[in-house]
Length: 221
Ligand SMILES: [Cu+2]
Image 1 (tube, protein in one colour):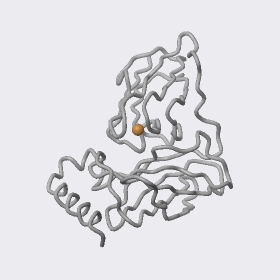
Image 2 (cartoon, helix red, strand yellow; image 1 turned 180 degrees about the vertical axis):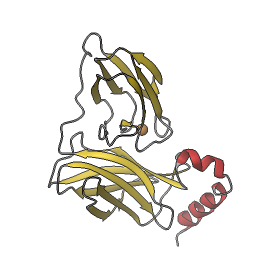
Image 3 (spheres, helix red, strand yellow; image 1 turned 135 degrees about the horizontal axis):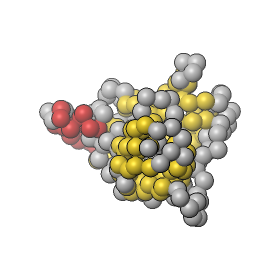
């Protein structure tokens, strides 16, 4: 056990005494996708940069970091061990998705509880970067830095048929997962955007898969 590892375990044990904080972080250590391809292709190794964070904030190395991806439609699972990258808490994972669909990612850092990293969409084009959103569209900015992202505006009201464009102006990848559905944007990289038309009136709550503390709501009239 090297000295850095010992420090990490002591810090994690100390944080364990503050259970209220965990309900926000979703576990002792969060595993986030910080960068990756805008489009996840089928049958090709896709490389993603990951970060392990204690309490969702402080980067920490915890080995081994095992990443699994389960296809929601079929239950098929693939699993790989992440490679350590330069910098505290930084890892790289290479996953080859065998088929199109929604895959839910889970990170298991060492013996710590598994962390739900949220769903990604494989085999579809995502993440265009519109220079200007179409007129009449509602633009929601994704703001913030590492581990402190937010949707701006958080809550908004639109009329049915409005195009909503989320623009990622932050420094890490995020997803839009609509509550109560399997619908996910897939990873929206920094500088990329995701667009969706809301045709049906109702209240749509959504969350960022990798960052469960990032939530928003759209009321469609
Ligand atoms: Cu996020």
